[in-house]
Structure formats: structure tokens, C-alpha cells
Length: 91
Image (cartoon, rainbow, N blue to C red; front, side, top):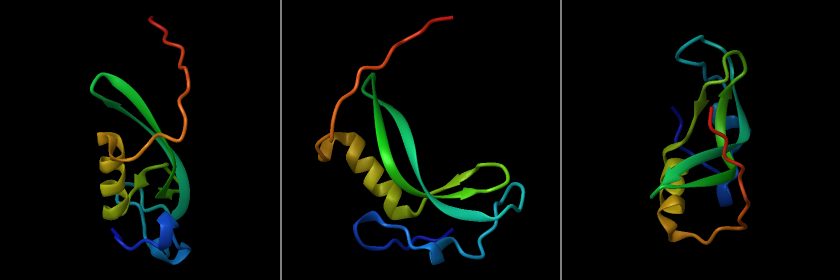
């Protein structure tokens, strides 16, 4: 999968051009997505994460430098933009 990214986290359309999903062979298109991760018992939400998303099955692909940024972010190397309260349900 491609590893190139544009400036300041912007994903150029050309990065995913011609790429196909490894599961269903659907077309992969660039999108900004949200990710939630559990870190040290707390959930964090990352917004506007550049990804390639399969139009057919929804599988997400991330460039290596995006994953590195995600890792640095959840390890607390970046300040959170804001905090939100999240309701918790149990079934």
C-alpha cells in the first residue's frame, strides 16, 4: 500500500489512484475518517485521519506515516484538541 502523504496530513487523491482492496477488489478512495482507541484504560478519538477506504466493503487502509502519527498522538505526544463526555451502556 502507498506510504506517501501530502503536507500537513493531507492525503493527495493520486496516492490511492488505481489501488484495489485486497479483500473484494473494490476501488479504494481517499477519505478522512475517525478512529477510536483504548489507551491506558481510556478511550481516545482521532478525527480527520487520512485513509484509503474501499468503496465496496469499507476496508480502511492507512499510509505508514499516518499510523506513526496516530501512535505518537495516542501516546500523549500531542495535545488533545478537545474532550467530550461519552455515555457508557452495558447489555
